[in-house]
Image (cartoon, rainbow, N blue to C red; front, side, top):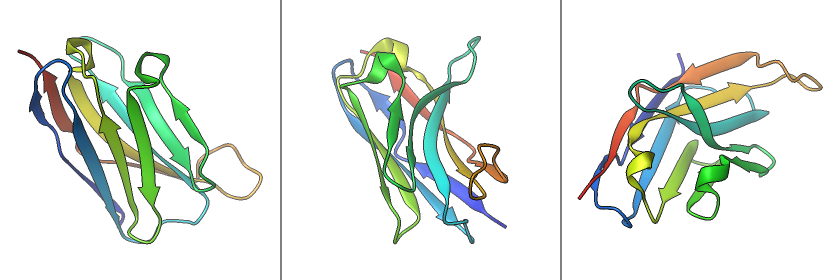
Length: 122
């Protein structure tokens, strides 16, 4: 029932910026973490950034200071602003939402979007 739809990917020059957005449809449990993962060809999927329903954020070390994650609880959206982009940021970026029961670190639900391509090249 829950679907995640990403948008905002595209081709950008090194040093450029773009903004990714993810819209969630359906009912999402109030205790949740929304985030972005990425996967480059031949590489493992890695967490880029996430943000909890309480507002706590986590960033991949290589993107700290360059990327910013935010969420709008009223609209059920999460966004990622990417700045000072580098060729190594090229990947498919996936939106992810995990929900949790009180006191549990094991997700009760785990949702994924289809991904949006980000290509950084001159």
